[in-house]
Length: 625
Image 1: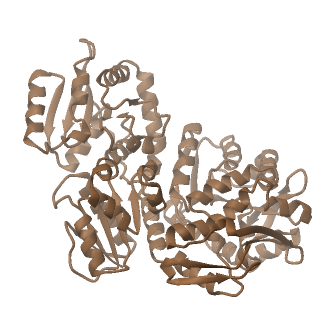
Image 2: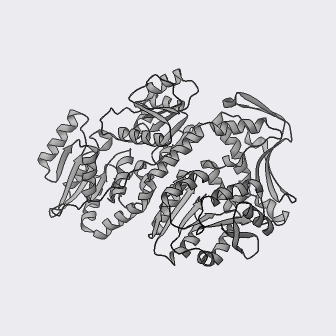
Image 3: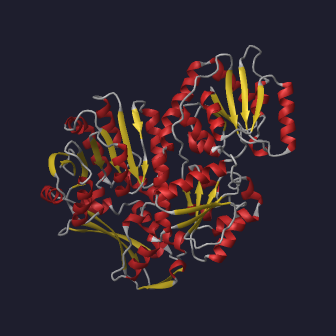
């Protein structure tokens, strides 16, 4: 595609918007798109606009949409335009409403949007190359503040806190950033003259700022409402602990339980926190360790995969697939679109339902047999997981592997960056010996990324949760062949498979008494409403689950309860449904042992071992080339 990338930060600027724009341009070029970076709209034949800052790029967005009607436009909400501007600027509101998608730099950013716009939000965490840690000063406890001097950054708060620490403290505050008004420059110079613990360094080059960060004992973020997404990720990459005001921008990156928060604007609380960091080495070590565990989230491959996923969305695949499915007879929608953020939350609820035996059966199986499974794979394996989700069951495999090897590389592949970030935080907290490398991508793109990350190390690849059941048997064989093509003789693939069983067990598992699965199914209609301007009344469609014993699959449908017409604005069509007409949404295939063997064989794999849960409902199959 020809991509116009607009940033309000001028060429040569060290502002975060410019740094982000240049990195994204490089990523988009790596994805084989042509990118032009500009400060305003530039005439040309464009396939996509990416603009940073809703208010400042509003004029460029309006001109782009005037010249290129119907072409997708992405607005990146970089801080003030998500918080301050959102409350006061008509241009920011209009830009958010006009945009095809809104990129936020941390997952909590979506919650700051008006509810009707949240579906547009996609979190893309900013990646940073590994930064070599420098030896800190032996003469002082140096902490750095990296941020331009402007009101929202509350830039002199750390200097004021430094005045309150005890006289014996060796605290020194080094502040790098441009004064955006003469008044702020005057205030910074006055603070330096009166406060021997504070030094304002002015605007530094990016290399100089990273050098300062790498040798600091601590990064201090004092923003009132906007987190320094760039600088926090840089600190984590450099192994520098972070103290921050408790604001969404920081909580979204560091987690709600980060111990280094203080209330925004509270000088005394910040002073107490700085004193604790200086005087309690164990507390400073805890901040450092927590940061090191989060660092893999800011990996470049994950940022690139998140962009690839967003571009795939903007390519119109959902719109095309919905149009094809509603035009077909009988009508159908693809189950691949179940798992938007709302659908993912509902599926987590389904997994806890009493009727949904699959999750409990697989967990019980892994509790009983994880050591035996791990004993079958080579020593020193890396763990790869397809569709990792919350990774709750994966912990049983992780535990078994860590009992026999000192460290473990774990590469979860999932289509949802937010789900990856949430599970990664918890895993990093609970497993210090885990080297976590999340990959936000669909399965095949994630598997391709393994070639550069694990060129020689043997792998245990997990595909749990009976995800194989969402493919028909021919599709399952073809997908397993794709995995097989990237396996060496030393690799193993563990596949969770739900077995054939009685209708009385299967149908309630997909049609629970509480109606959660019905809500999950209807969420497809709600997604069409949100993303394509549909006017479906979800409650005018009844959820139905039926087990076809001959084909060995549970079929899910949405059945029109009355004759109705449903407009879908993005498709320019109105669809007529007859009373009782069924819209097919999912098949979930169940397997016999012989069917498992046949699908594996068709993919160039064989079943090396298999394990069942205590009631014989579920199977884990270890496949080898």
